[in-house]
Length: 262
Image (cartoon, rainbow, N blue to C red; front, side, top):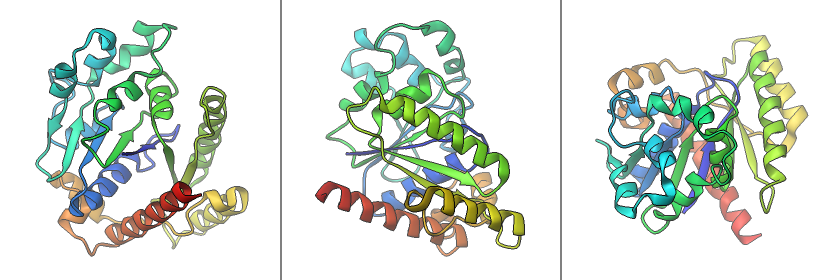
């Protein structure tokens, strides 16, 4: 089971779009895929047909009493979606209170890793949609994943978010047994904009091989698919955004294979 967290300490850079699109492409291949929505805003949960304001069992439930939570309750939190091979552990807006509730309690950074251990034989792939702020939820995601994908919109403020994100990764690496591999994905790129092209060039010069050698373009079809509650590949597999994410997925699978054989 591969576990990929999609994270950036800036909102609006296409984290949720990246998760749902990659998950959809894998699901269409018959791969059983689990999505964890760790963002209290619950955009992914809403996208997949659940209400983060009223969902009864959620990731919040798991944080309350994980050590006492029976396996059945963990599986009860798992939701089917209308998309074949895609399952969801939903967000609850109550998750926004977790940092205040949990404080510095020991072991609270490993709750998601423990939860995923129950699913290791059930899913081929897990995606974690992360909140844009550093706290117990982001720390859990980074502790649980095998690999970090960092979507970066090709604009100046996203570069600042990337710097903060990589600083967080370096802190997390001190507590992990091995360094967390990360991959920077340029998103929402408008090739007609000189400023966007300059940022893309700066990304590649500054971070080299850690940056994907292509980019996800601005594509209005993403908005249309979101309105319908569909991943873009389900709505239009030939859309520019679908094709770009298919190329990204191929790159990720290839590099994953190289790492496992390295």
